[in-house]
View 1: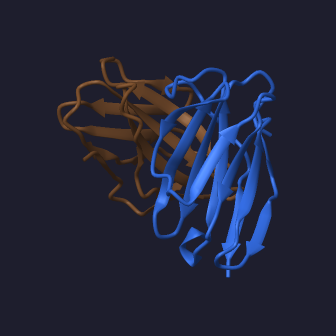
View 2: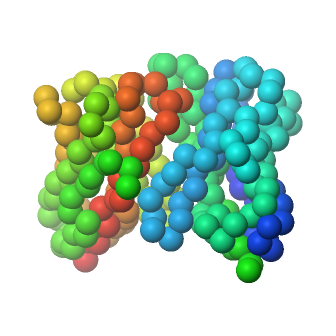
Length: 116
Length: 114
């Protein structure tokens, strides 16, 4: 069965610095999707970035980028120039690309604090 | 504001009871997703509807059911409630049924079962 692991329950970063959140997953499939979601104190879930497994190029969205290592089954999130508004819970998620397989697996989350 | 609305915001009920959570997707979105976030289970995908039909099913219990109506709003029905059903229930919507496409989440309904 697929699993998603986030080994850092809590992390902190100085404002304007860079931080990397780790995510590893286990799957026997070759085609899948990976996501990072942000959940600020308001509790509303927000999609940060997504990656299709068949794409070699790492996804980037403004200050957010990923390091996708398919062979190592690793999908880390890098936040550059951290801002106070980045403080939130971050969830890594896996979803099979098979339309007949509907499971979505979330990691346990990493709580990120931003220090002014 | 994502454009997805959920009612009620908070719900307190007793074990054994039945409740209905309501979700209105963003204007024009055809797909609705339901998620559960609890301390014990973490974040879980429950079920997805697309244009009135069930599209994908995740970790949804048999005591739970959902439907999407012709006006595209959705309801999640939880019955024979147990203490462990206490959680934050999210609804999300997307333009089409492709899970890869961005989903917009509502603010959630906080369910407390006493």
